Image (tube, rainbow, N blue to C red; front, side):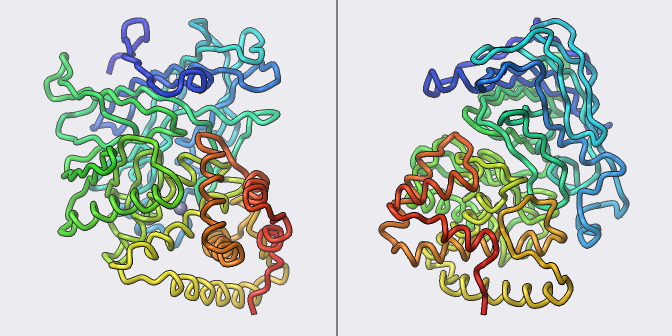
Length: 483
Ligand SMILES: [Zn+2]
């Protein structure tokens, strides 16, 4: 495909969010051309970046998740090998950065040894509140892998495909790659993404698809223009097998993209109920679109703003649970963000707990809230017994970075299971009236912002009028004893 220049190509941008906030948020404009023969995505990307820190900057850092698929990196544990690689052999992908420009002038850039961080040098200091335009030309090669970014036999997934600016906290936060969990952390931004792809595919995406038209230069290709406002990432999925069902609820378009699903109507209903349930419990879903997308994926499900992946290999009995869990992430991860590498419990613990609330509020699924909690307690106790036999120095704390967990069960049992039990314990301590009031306030306080372990504890303490530091410390540092 031809290299596309921003001077020629014009993005229709009509951002409609609250003016002053949106102006401080980054704006990504991406033109992406997908080549189905080579399974590559050629991209031109412009980012308008505002220095919202108090420091002067001489470089901007981007996280390059696409490079976690490079040869030498490990993206899944050996136990997942068969369900991850459709061809039963390893396959690799990567991102190649061709050029960087700052305000239209060529800029130096470097990529660190691990491949996870791209640093673009600024030609002049960027002072607080100043804006800079960064242009990148790059190519993403997809691995044949049922993962966030990659292709299987049914779908082509474009999760975390583009260079995304690292969050600035007294320096850019440079997360490592990780096999477990979601090693992501980003700011709420605005996106205009134009995707050029063979017209045999149907497109599912974050934000709204404003229009889809035929490519004038090639009748067998379509161009779709997508816009997503105030979201912290942008994902899309292509498939020539997709069927689509839609239901509108409270002015939100809820879509289900699927293949081979005789229960598609029921699964769409679950998604609709999840949007309603969480909206009532925590605060309204602030976007006009949500897509639940069945996909080639190895880890059950994955959340992106306005779009969740649901793995096509999970059992029928688990689908509703995964849909509810991934949709709960729209509140915890999507609207209220956090560093998912450093404090995964902040979103996963609350999301797993919210999934239990979904079943408590939708009794027709026959899954009782108290049974989820007692089952989780038993599971955690069994896990603890086994791991304490294996490791003398076993660490029961929740609040630590993903790579400090030695195995995936250790990560899941702490951030999800123990995290959920912690919120259940807090609910019982505060009583429902106070607990849900506090949760709503927390959602309101951190909407479109990033929370953290400290911020969550502080917010919950403030809104409950009880100092909860000792409560959270006991759970997060591993002092709570399971007898
Ligand atoms: Zn999750």
